[in-house]
Length: 209
Ligand SMILES: Cc1cc2nc3c(=O)[nH]c(=O)nc-3n(C[C@H](O)[C@H](O)[C@H](O)COP(=O)(O)O)c2cc1C
Image 1 (cartoon, protein in one colour):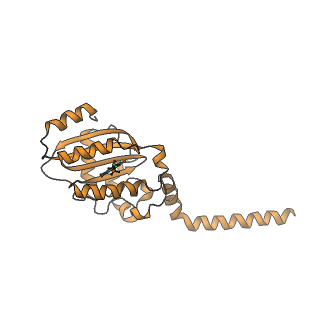
Image 2 (cartoon, rainbow, N blue to C red):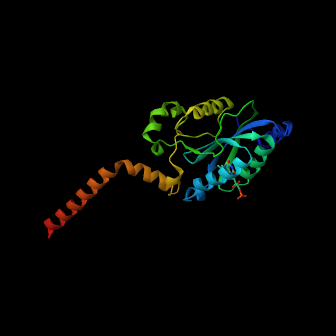
Image 3 (tube, rainbow, N blue to C red):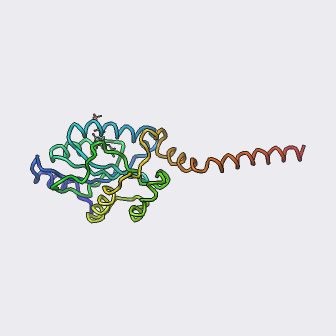
């Protein structure tokens, strides 16, 4: 069950400022943000700079229009980041799934590299590892239980090659990117079909002239 906002505040207040905490929330991209061509790059570059400075590690997953982010760090730093994230109008329906103190971090990467949970965005290497992720697809993380969230984090953190596409390759918006990655593996087929269609059109024109 997701935590109510008031419960998140109460829980955070009970934790010492210097304690190491892990927070997982989910949210959905707004329609406007889905049309943005730079949304993932923007978030990644902001996170890279801010998180490194504040010793915040974690992972940011995206799929099917939804985000799931795990952030880890000193409580004071994590709550400051949460404030910023809650105020960010690029996403909505924000629900905190997990908030706990931890002995050690699960993730070491402060760059907050994106993990894309959409099969058509995966490299062949990633597809081979994808069995473990199947139970979580299609990706609809809202309302996940504490246990399911923890199990998911366990899977994500064991991935050597994250199911991601290179951020520098994302030059389209979320919808365009999807189309590009569906079309790309079928380029040859599309070229042949396109050429045959042109030939057919020419033949029909010649036939009826
Ligand atoms: C899903 C999502 C995840 C984000 N994760 C981070 C993050 O890990 N670190 C960060 O600094 N900003 C993150 N942001 C961006 C912040 O919400 C916010 O836009 C930014 O910190 C504001 O910085 P500015 O006031 O300097 O422009 C994220 C935004 C979204 C939509």
